[in-house]
Image (cartoon, rainbow, N blue to C red; front, side, top):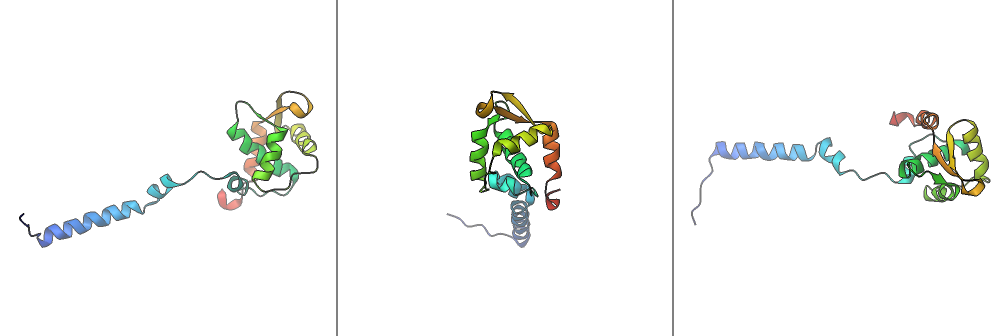
Amino acid sequence: MTTKTITKEDFDALVKRVAAIESQMSSSEVKSSIKKNLSKREIFLQYSLESDVEKCLAIMSILDNENSKDGFDLKAIQESYKTVKEKTPGNPSDVIARLHKKGFVDVISGKHRNRMYSLTNTGLEALAELRKEEEK
């Protein structure tokens, strides 16, 4: 086996290439491609939510993203409150009725406890206004 001596110029060129690769590896492009999906709780915390109506709207938006074709029911809404570690309102049906009255939610199908819901564009716009300032 023969050994080859490296000239100072070759060594300097190699150092530059390594520095360029290291710079690329620490760039935001690489870091952003490695990001995990946000949890439901993290998505929920991106909003400035004060009332039960606002909290329910945020939860429905999470569900709408997961089940946009099929909609979601009262049970899914109640389970999502637990997932995001928020207290379920005393009567979620009343909160949903208020959202429906404001035009934020549509009833897709069903009656009473079997109703399937979907967010409207108006609901999504209202929720966008609740996004925390640092996120805008």
